[in-house]
Image (cartoon, rainbow, N blue to C red; front, side):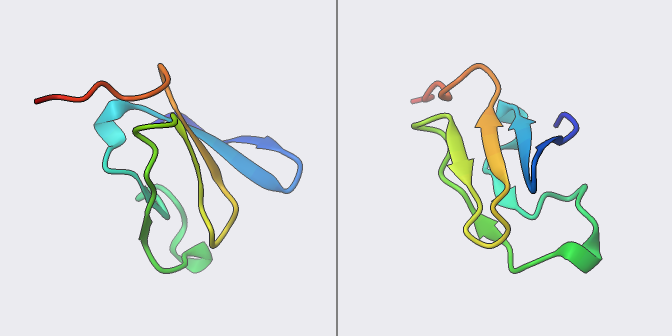
Length: 68
């Protein structure tokens, strides 16, 4: 996972396929700022936003390839 990029009050974090399944908060986030863990469906669109904290996640390389 790469470092968070801030633009205004909300964060944007770029994640890779190795971070899937994606959940927020991420393990690198501080515990005092934590909220209940929520899994975010990012594979189809390549982007997801946490409904609790508003952090926007972007999948590096776009949508994830499906493995059969």
